[in-house]
Image 1 (cartoon, rainbow, N blue to C red):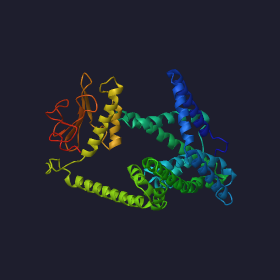
Image 2: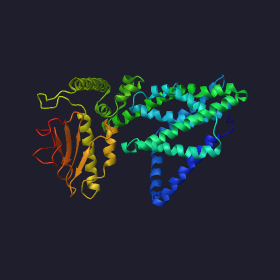
Image 3: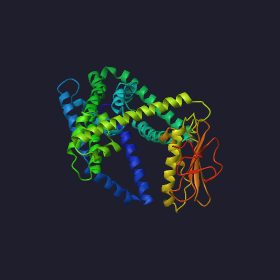
Image 4: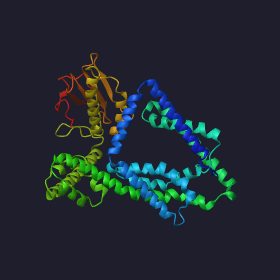
Length: 439
């Protein structure tokens, strides 16, 4: 077993990290953008320091240290676990701290983190890290594994790179199985010389430290969510005191992160415009009622999609009965139109053809299949454009412009538009006879 201060795998990881840093420095020097990057880095660091994040992180680390100190009085922890604890803090601990902020917007963060520590993958990771390969194997293997991880992450965004992704994942799988096999063989071979009590405590370390960290992170998430609500309320109040409104938020939320999550965004602005405790209290009730009605409407819309799937024809308003992928397609096309408006000014007052990456990202952003089938056309003079997509129902949607921003035209029908936007088959600005399904 690896008993050194740093195992061969940890040394290989540090060497690989240093290599990537050196490559990045060389690329920056050759590109001549080093000064700009340093300026951005200084600005980002100054912004970070000006927030409460360093204080929250210091509090989090302090609480972890107190927890470890208390655990040292009993069996779970002693100084032989110091290295394992430091490694856990640098990798898992910092990662869990980041979840304090993602939990403000995203549901289920804490449950997923708890599920992971009881998953079989944790056992395999522990076994794989019990023993390292020789250094002459670990360094090139770690470098290739890092490249494959990057290829798998970025290649998954493009259907054309499926072969590369498979190759990268195959290497990572083979390397992982080889590491598990090597460690298992070493474990059996050195069984008589192993401190089995220490081995058990190392295995149990993340199993008890992770729940403790999540208990510490929950109030941090609540505080971050509250700070977001308070900042928007203060801005919306336009100089008026908001102590009473803040008190209403704290009482109504009652320490529940989900309750504060519902008050993010425009809800915070509504609370900031309320005057006094009672008005804020009633406004929170109205916000919750509006959100309930919105969720019910969403469920009703989903039921209609299921019931109308495959139906041919239109309703009394002229809209298609089968509206699968309609909402997602319209949202995707509107975002593409927004991007074109921004590029027009930056590209010498002409619409831009090179939006392939943005078009591909529409699949993930709006839940469309990949490839998503969005086709874009730009006129030769760059003053007109349109993008169209055929939904799963066979119905077509299109959006475009026949002039500079903010000109916008809409189309939907059983076939693709015959050309660039015009009054014959398109509607300008709003839905109409030529775009009855746009909302």
